[in-house]
Image (tube, rainbow, N blue to C red):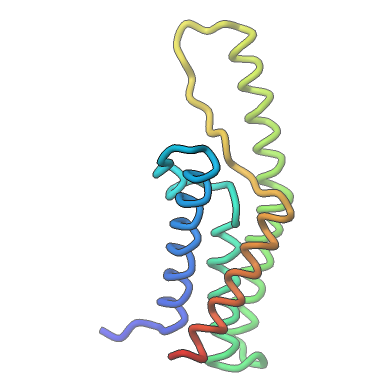
Length: 141
């Protein structure tokens, strides 16, 4: 069964970004942090890298004037907008809930996610990684 070259590139970029997060935060914190492989936040934004790699790969492979590129671009814009606006609000709510849980001194520990959003530099790093790696993969393959 043939698989889309653009899909392979996008998944490879996603995995590379998640592995980078593990290495980056392990070095930064001085201990192995494999949990960052499945984290939804941090540097770089793997979601942004994933969708931008797909979009650039489709554009380079099918043409930037194609309908397929247009669909990928709109999809990417929605995902990135969501990262900037909606998930930032979710992160703020998570921090407020964590403070409330701490103040209420609940007997049962409630696990709240600590990384659910991205800063603008993390999103820009994901965008650069996704576009750059997709372009590199296109010219190498």
